[in-house]
Amino acid sequence: MQRRHFIQTGLAAGAGLTLASPAVFAATHRKAGEAKFKLDYAPHFGMFTHHAGEDLVEQLRFMAAQGFRAFEDNEMRQRPVDVQTALGEELARLDMRMGVFVAHTIAWTEPNLARGEAGARDHFLEEIRASVEVAKRVGATWMTVVPGALDPRLEMEYQTANVVETLKRAAAILEPHGLVMVLEPLNPWRDHPGLFLARSPHAYLICKAVDSPACKILFDIYHQQITEGNLIPNIERSWDEIAYFQIGDNPGRNEPGTGEINYRNVFAFIHGKGFDGILGMEHGNATPGRPGEQAVIDAYLAADSF
Image 1 (cartoon, rainbow, N blue to C red):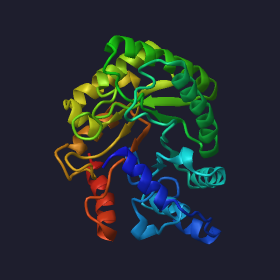
Image 2: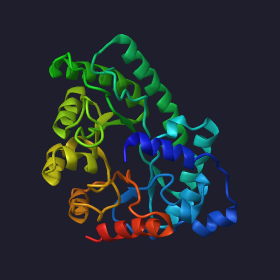
Image 3: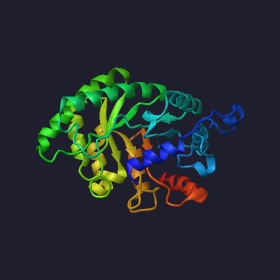
């Protein structure tokens, strides 16, 4: 499942939003100390619709009732302002943290940030400014940045310098607000051929060059298993620049336990390092319907039982 598919299905799932009654809220609100998980895994809209229905608020409440303390939504920037505001208020009431949303229009096929042209840079920075306001409405700290397509006619060193310069300017926008853009390397072998950023060492180099608390790495375990493997050593080497994780097993990009990744060991390592951020559940459900949704919850309980 590709990021573009997540965005399309999430928008379809989020066609409507209503605020449920205080009685329903009271019935589903978690009390302090009731959390089931050691780490903060973040589901997304559409993952539990057979249990919670299509209403976005009800989906949040179902997630909270299952012990999830965080939530992410790639397309939050595209939602109407009143919906963003309502979701932010509900997240606050549920004591759930907002994970990432995609901060800008990703150039999947045509180089933009890598080429360093002024027009593309200015458009990107304008979208970052707009995303600051989105983050304020929903209580977000992190936003996803993907530098876009590779320029096949320009040496990688020049492209990297162009990206670093743009991200420095974006960091200057985000720093005063305490916000963080997280750079996501995406695998070139299965889902996203031809993109500028594919490897965690490259993301690490860029973050070191930008040298800002507002520019860190989103380490997507699914993508990096495909691109480079060697997960725990690469997480260790990149640790001081990682601010966010995303999850998906391989092959299939579904819940932990459906593929080759030993998520119990990976989660134990991340927890042992003292990670207190969010791990986004950016994957599909291996089995359809209510049984598949319950299987996702059970998979996280199992993977988190280290």
